[in-house]
Length: 161
Image 1 (cartoon, rainbow, N blue to C red):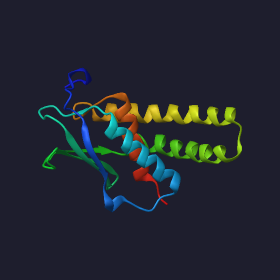
Image 2 (spheres, rainbow, N blue to C red):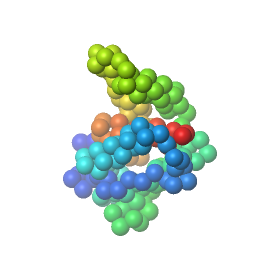
Image 3 (cartoon, helix red, strand yellow):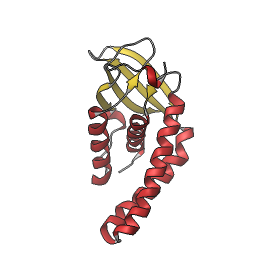
Image 4 (cartoon, rainbow, N blue to C red):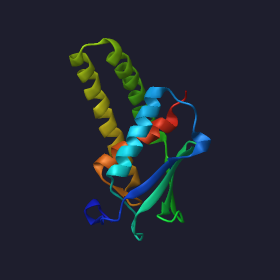
């Protein structure tokens, strides 16, 4: 299944982060999580060959792996996709560093300085989304924006405190 083959029903109607991996996070990180989930549920393209959506998704981290627990609209398990976290490590690390700079910048820097940092942040976000889309290829089909928002949630799962 390719991105162009997605049907109107191929989308997420619910997304959860596994409570086992949930920790209390800074308000900025919680805001990123809430916005990513809201945006995902408002507009996403998510499909699995051989299954018809809509889908529910539980994301979790387990043993240095990212787990996509994909369910149908009635919450019946359909497929679990497990991805190594190794390809994401450097991007997530860089993303956290630039987010720290961004969160500090919005408190004290000029709009031009904030925009420069935000451009870097968006670039890393795009890179993370592209890596995720590539890693999901052959298992799950997502569009660019859905991959970017899911990458945000991967970063949230990595956040500690």
